[in-house]
Amino acid sequence: MQYQFSENISELKPSAIREILKFTGMPGVISFAAGNPAPEAFPTEKIASISEQLLRENPVLAMQYSITEGYTPLRDTLKKIMKEKNCYSPETDDLIITSGAQQANELTCKVLLNRGDTLICESPSFIGSLNAFKSYGVNLTGVPLESDGMNMEALEETLKTNPNCKLIYVIPNFQNPTGFVMSLEKRKSLYALACKYNVIILEDNPYGDLRFSGEEIPSIKSMDVENRVVYSGTFSKILAPGFRVGYVIGAKEILQKIIVCKQVADVHTNIWAQAICERFLNTVNMDEHFENLRKIYRHKCNLMTDTMKESFSEKVTFQKPDGGLFIWCTLPDECDMNEFCKKSVEDYKIAVVPGNAFLVNETEKINSFRLNFSTPTDEQIVKGITILGKMTKEFLN
Image (cartoon, rainbow, N blue to C red; front, side, top):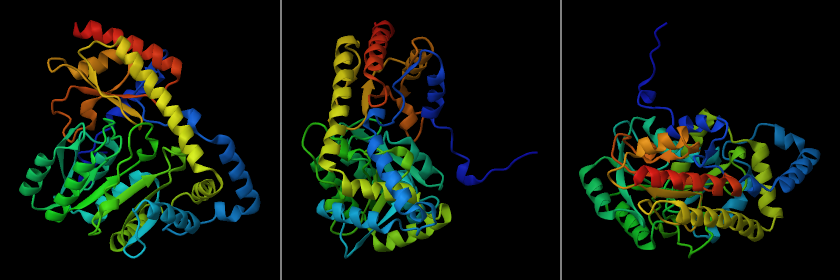
């Protein structure tokens, strides 16, 4: 039979990351290609205890249908936390629970953009969100990303030349894939441009709580006086990604539309996982929990970057991040980045992600690749980076 597929998926391709991850099942391959939290960061004993208590005391809550907006005690807890961060105003905002931040981002695009409307994103950016946006037939336009955030001159030029631009998508904290942080100055400039050109900002913040050095920078949402910032957060990096619990904050009018779309998509987010998240937030010392996470990721990042400094060719450049899960490495202009990434996994058994996997147009020229330090063990980090370092010297010299 000849199948005809919808226009919405005609331009979608398998994630290059997922394709590379196929190699990680091969014997002897060390993977720096994933983006998963460190397994040792999962508070498994506390989650087991909370889950057992929940299933004994209120099993119906965990097993019955729930409301689309999310588990009310969890929503109330998050509203309180985010209000303290100046990211939630009860007068103008609402907050609902989503199936991860991915769903928050996807549904925001769904309710705000029509086919052909322009959505501006950082280039490079998170492939999961890019594919979600592409599925709605939007004109996805990338703006060059610098070490302190989007190039603001290029952003304004893009806004000037795209009168039907509706949304700007950014990951200001420890951006995926680069690990870069948008400066306070650029956050203010971005918000000012959004106001000037009447555009909504979608601020995706999955990594903000994983800062292990440097000064925290206020969110763009905390600067919002015109109610034009939609903010998405998640428990995936601070608790467990398998829970698929995220949340979205934004203008009540926008959230009402998102609720209707979510009812169509999945009825509601896993209620058992929502209840676990709520009890975790209210029974665990979160300052200690976050400090433990930062300790784990600080150690892993230091171990990887120290080994890179010792092992890598000096022709490979990288910036040590202050948090998050990723390190962005750049090869000299004359090098074939895709060939490098292919050779690293096939010949050296080291999996990394090619930089063009994160571009709006994968055929664009980019000479960078992404490393992940959270998932591999200490032994794998030292062994894998040493091998990769040897390869950089052989490949580049």
